[in-house]
Image (tube, rainbow, N blue to C red; front, side, top):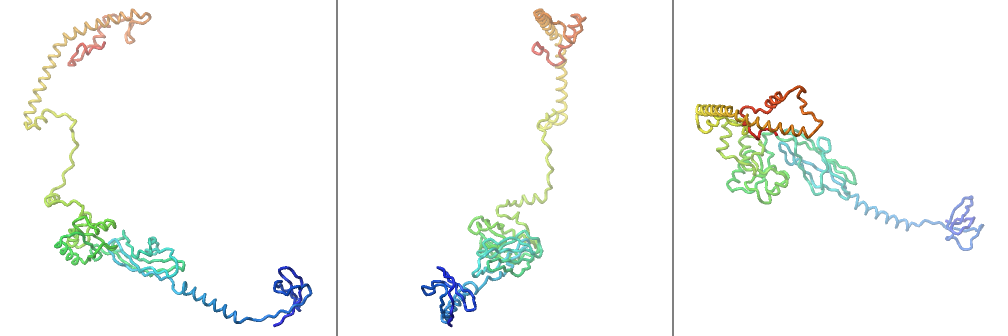
Length: 387
């Protein structure tokens, strides 16, 4: 198709061309013949290149197919959740490995009764989880929610119920070091109560039964906080027909002997001992009784001691006269010293604040005697007199 155009304004980069119906077209100047000026008429032939169009379409289709095969052929799969084991207070849930296709993982969350219970750590490596602390004989619903860069996918709800106290089918036992005969008896007891035994410590292992605390399985059980009990626990559960606590059956628990156990069952609890009275002195009668003497002998001994103490008091009162004389002489010496001190201190009154001005020396002496006289039985002597 041939088109005639009139050259209008010419610039270094763009030239304005005018159509016959006076329309303006901006055309690259480099594509026009040289020496073009305003008013020149140029003929432009326009044709469609079908071969180039076909090549471009082929290249674009190949790119679309490559993108679809790399990113659109598959998508993340919906998680499939199921209950692996149930006990009286715990549940073990497991699911198939997560398939993300070409998407990136954002999170994998577990929901319990419609509420988020938490995110699953390392969801690409972990395919199970254990939920503890549940109520006995209670129904729960669980489901998983997978979030990826390609969208969000939720699993179907799984309904699980914890067992009753008399239902022992959820007990999963892993054995440690046991004698051969005891292991066979334990296997039979486990089969009778409806429980199961598994090889190796797993996430659904509820109890680890052994008689010796050593070995790799024992270490793994301790690391996973699985109760390590003696075989007697299984026998006690079978005897009582229900699951029992493991506190008394721990491997490191103290086991009472038969005599001690019988004594605990038959003997009544002893009353609490009274407060010790070590600081209180014992009476002669009590001391005599503690030494194997009779009560009457202790009372006679106490009476003899009281009579001897009274005679000693009488002797003390008889000797008070001689002691009083020595005391009077000492008082006289003290009064002489006080008079000498008063004479050396002019301006001070010789009377004490508690005495009247009209009192004589006799009254003072009688007052001093009353103040200094020793009480009966206190052993008055020179050292007892205040200087």
